[in-house]
Length: 285
Image (cartoon, rainbow, N blue to C red; front, side, top):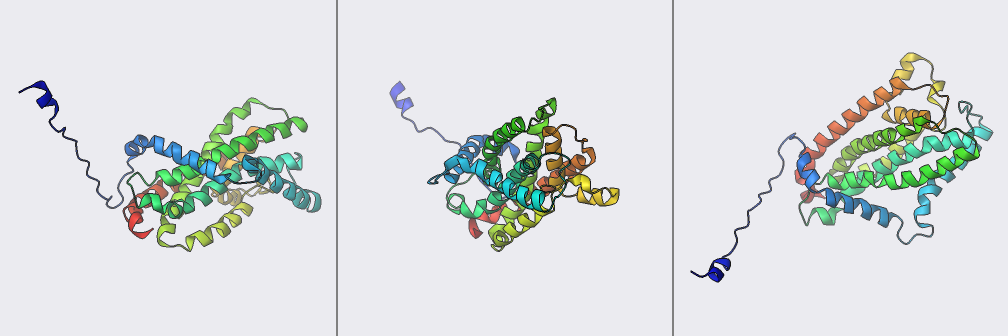
């Protein structure tokens, strides 16, 4: 038999059998890593779509927290005289808004991500976790742009930049993990119960006032109430971020530890629930 005849034989392609997950199965992180390029493109798509056909484009990443800071300054600082730990009101509010906006946008976008990505889910297989994960990670771009504005404001108010600034990526990661944990719960529930999408904005709005953005967590001095207050995982993120940005603040170790534990539980529970419900997404969404 000639060599050409041998080359013309069909090549056997290995078959891949995809089965739906059963029960509270463990997350297949190896499979998620294989689809890392998809996560990258989904993240970049979310960033581009967010500011497509807008008047100010990516400037909204700066305008949203900045305009909110201006409102907080006139209402809570100038009118209500809420203490700001001795720091200028604009710096105090803006430094609290940055991690909060990162968390807020991550939860909101991840909660609706499966419903808005229904066309993709019903047409091709890929780890469904990639969609809410990309929605949360895409907020990092906005955070980075707004953070540059914060550094400029610190220069204007002559606030010294210390080595604590190196801890900022850690608190940014904590905010992303917390947002992903909550977003996984909401996205999986929103597929079956569409009223979750209506409840989410109200829930996040109430969550904001339960977090130390317009006031300092140092106003809560009772140890028991402070421990209960620390069960809000965003508290440790915001207080830790302010500690890293503003000099002179006491390290909120207890609040940060509580935030890490609660965020880890939210992420683990959300991932397990997401994995359990994942097999029905394409049929229900």
